[in-house]
Image (cartoon, rainbow, N blue to C red; front, top):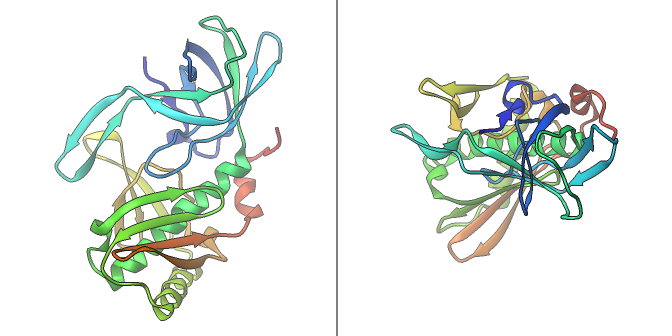
Length: 250
């Protein structure tokens, strides 16, 4: 049985009631969840599981996905869809199948991770303007609530002038309040694209809905080898964006 991914229907929903499907050595699997699992470089959500029968609060410290169905599309990377989502907890509890829980996110962490994911795409969008095809040189990615980064296998280093240009160009897009759209592949609902202006890239992560939410973006670089270069995106805390998630307290 797959886990219904509520974050694809409403990414700003921070809690839901769910039924326990399975308890594994790694964590708990439910029939539905608001928690985004680790994938595509984005960290998994964290939060708390509230046991309905006694009100016990059980922290979950990571979220990952298992199983699923492989898809192969001509114009989309190979991925697995219809997964089960594992909410990782300490193994100090006993549960019964079909127990009911409230799954509640750390929405501050989710919100900031979401902004860094969109900010990283915006920076890549500018890089593509400068170096067409550089997306094919990506060899690593990490998106957290503190930063987003892309690692490239390239034989040159980003200059200070180029980094300044990337940041300036990102701010131009931010000032224009350009909508960011997420849409599905016509053959697979869970094969998603991120689109801003005329730039489109496959991505199933969480994202803001407008470039205006990325105000204050900072672009940095780091050399990680003779033929490797890292681009880093950092964004400040955004209280206005957090308000979209409603109650952010535990």
